[in-house]
Amino acid sequence: MKYYNYRPLKKLMVGGTSASFKSILCKQIDNHPQVNVIHRHDKILQIFIQPFINFSEFEKNYLNFQKNVNYLTIKDDELKKLNFKSQKKSFLFSPILLRKLLLNYSGYYVNEQYAWLKKIGADISSISLVNEKFDFNFIKYDTYIFQKIFKSNIKNFSPENLYDLFLEAFLYAQNKNKKKYVLFMAPNNYESINFAVKEKFNIKIIYLMRNSEDIVLTRAIREIVNTTGITNKKLIQSKINKKIENILYANFYRAELNQRKKIINLEKLYPKMIKTIRSEDLIYKNKQTIKKIIKWIGITDNKSINKLSYEGTILKNQRNYLGKINDNDFTINDSIKNFFYIQKFGIKKFIFNNKNKTFMVIVFLIKGFLYKIINIFKN
Image (cartoon, rainbow, N blue to C red; front, side, top):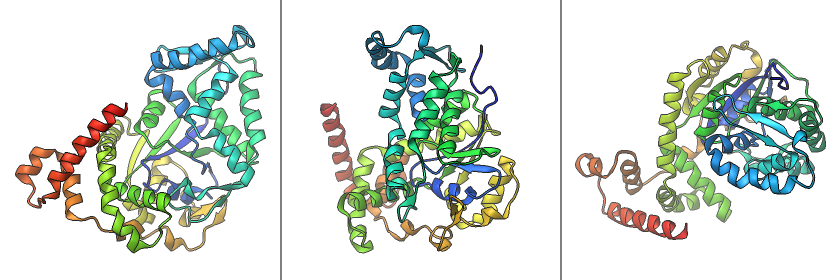
């Protein structure tokens, strides 16, 4: 079976939940002579994960749609085939289907918006204090991908073949020469890591694992800032506990704990492909931690990693990024700590083991129950 690009790119993936400092690690490796770093978090992997997770649902929602659209415009022999390595699944796809998947599941077309603005929005990561430059030719990017797929004589592709095309196109659109490795950020979920491993990508994955309670704290801060525009620390602090309470109702914390367990188990099964790193070590013990990462990847220890940079430009005020996590200045009250305990260990352990009980726990449990009931009726 003939595939495009039978020698896959050597890929480095930086994984982790939101607020786990993936962007900082990307900026630390940015100027390394052996690595191309892609700072955009465009979630292209998601378009392959959808059929991988639930093929029957994908067939109903997408392949049937493709049949209805294609019959007037595209012949079956003009379609390309996507073959999954880890499952006995494959399907034919057209440019129309590929564009629909990109629109629904990725940030592909956000690249077009940022290319026009020549800036990546400050919302793209927690450390983007100002808009960052984005010298990117979207037309070159888009044309490269669709011509390489649909204007070629290649009929069969694997997810890795296609994904490598997206990475190559990204570098091409930025006029960058291809280096030995290409590093990019994974979507904020376990599925993307699991997919890359099960599909046997030529990849090494560094997964940043931050304290779960602090992830929720940072999420609360972001939501307050994004919805109210408040930036004053005292005003943010006054709203934090209520915001965290709402986040806990939505089971974000439980989902994060569950993802953490899955990643640890996956690392045990594939130690040469996955390495977990404490986010706190990246910030507080940076020199030792980055050397450990570089050694595990197998790239040279280069002085370029001593400072953070973006597109080859050393960032000013390095102390703003390393040595301190500003979100840890905020405090969480005892009631909220109880709520964390309940979701982490369960109500029985809380009743019999936790000494720091408060009356607000009863209110929390009642509200949580009502929240679930309301969501059931909504869905």
